Length: 241
Image 1 (spheres, rainbow, N blue to C red):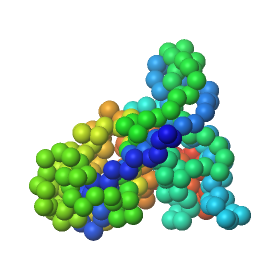
Image 2: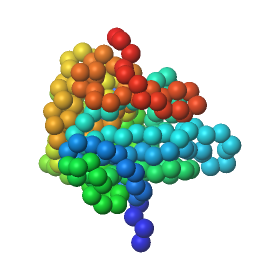
Image 3: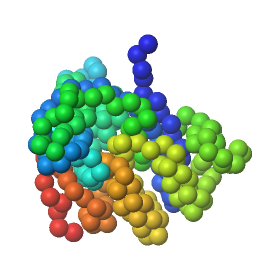
């Protein structure tokens, strides 16, 4: 039986923003990318996406190379295709063409083996709008981690939500964590808490983030890409803030 994406969406409420976590798996192909140490690299190779029944691509030949335990940031105007790209990476939609995969390299910079499949346990995504993906009625059902059975995720206070998000990450540790606008709608204290959490997670995970909040995230960023209207992605430094 073919495997399908497993979406697990525990909700964290920070101010007016609700964040959910989903997990998925995807199978792709290979690419040579020279690095100077023994590591793995997350790759998006020539990915284009055209919604079924349409004639216009939302994404056009997108390429990303992101070494493990590094922080990648995608920025650009709303409606340019950033969230669509995250959904493809998460396996929620399939690319019209191109491939998404993990390649491992030795300390000589050569690929150790062919590209490999990511299992559902190795990929996580934190959505800006979790209600589109939320699949359970209580925190306990989503996290399965000892939270009160009668307390719904949407009723959590900010402090509890922050603790819940950390618990989710610690219980379900992915190799690649994708976050869509993780600072949107948060007050200054919650934003600082999330940035601190991302700094900690960067030591253990590969992070790919879509955000308009460039100034606060800039110290964490190793690689950045700008998405142009029309779904064209170009690697470039963050603009001066």
